[in-house]
Image (tube, rainbow, N blue to C red; front, top):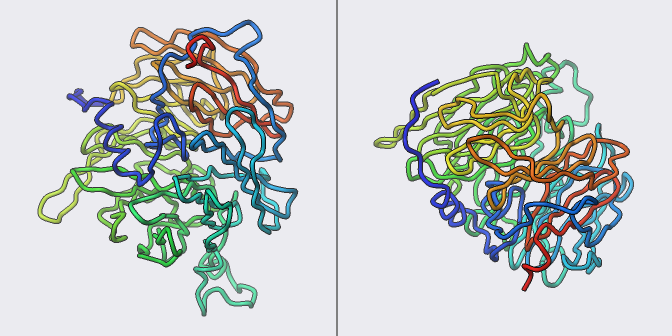
Amino acid sequence: MRASRPHQSYSIFVSLALGLSGLSARAGDWPRLGGPDATWVSSETNLARSWPIEGPRVLWTVDVAEGFAGAAIYGGQVFLLDRLGNQQDVLRCLALNTGRELWRLPYDAPGSLPYNGSRNVPTVEDQYVFTVGPFGHLHCVDRKRHKTLWTRHLVEDFKEAGVDTQQAPTNRQESLARAQLPMWGMTQAPLLYRDTVIVAPQTHKTGLVAYEKSTGKIRWNSGYIGRNWYSHVSPYLTTLCGVDQVIMLAQPSDPEKSPADAPPAIISSIHPGTGQILWTNQTPAPDKIPIAEPVRIANDELFITGGYGLGCLVLQVSHSTAKWETRLVFHTRTVAAHIHSPVFYRDRIYVTSFKEHRGTHTGLVCLRPDGEPVWQTGPELEFDSGAFLIADGMAFVMHGKTGELNLFELSDSGPKLMAKSTVLNARDGKVWAPMALSDGRLIVRDQHEMKCLEVRPRAMRP
């Protein structure tokens, strides 16, 4: 741990992230994983601070296929990359007000996966919708004409002659060198930067790739940053030391090692305009399955967390005369996220932490930027792998096994539970999909249904 120092205000981070994102998001939209600025913090205000005994009003419910894909919201429309059986992915567009399906666009993608079903949140802007399917299909869709403009494949397009042959591999090294799906499929959200869309094939030669939005032409590809075997992190765009960069975490070696025997994950910074690798480091403990995105907590600091024994850490970055350096500020295993990303809000870091992943501080945990815990909801209130987001000074936290939605008011004096209600049946558990919030409407889902909940008092609506 270390002494705390002043951190920039939350509003500065939001303004900066909006400028970086490349999204022409409208006020109140949730156009990608993590919202308009990928902070998991909504700009919504005047939200309800209590609910009726039956919970927030359900505006609509639609059936969805099994899976974990969350929604994106843009211009009063909800976008979901669903799956039809084990044969097709389908981009669905629904009206936010009513849930009525406006259009759908399927494509063939046969196959099944462990923890089967849909995976990824679309990334939406005024002209385009970008999707990455669980089997590696990248699609660019015209949002207004509902037409696919171009497609690419994050496995097939990066196979190499002499490595990815038709012959069966003769040893494990040959097998691991080949282009392949990650263990649980492609699990990432496309990242927009200026006139490009950035995705992560993560082969043994190619790390990130930037495609021109309008044509699908490759603008650049980075070098090796780790493999995709067990890596499920989405590219995270931020600015450190005044320089735009994309941060990625990935495993470098054999995916069959136990969590304790796995190597550290590689932490890489890539320039989003050129693909140049600016700096690399590694986690200070094994990180077998990187999933949660990092979060910037200062002009020169990143907070990183993960399960399977990693815990959490802060990395400080410095830059002078084209030379980049990084320094580990602190590392602790007392707080350990699993699936969902940490959130930095009003100079505090919020993490959903697990005792199953060696966290001793559990549930929703509040940390100071120096790593000192402020409070935790566990062990009385823990949330499995449920999602959370922050809006209007409150945290909306989903229980990943029961479908219970919890509403906490946030302050340093401790979390105040304002309301809770079981909003999803969760008969199969695994309520792990990220949530989305727009115009006082919260989109949640389980393995069978997606619901729109009204979380702003009706009297506050225009």
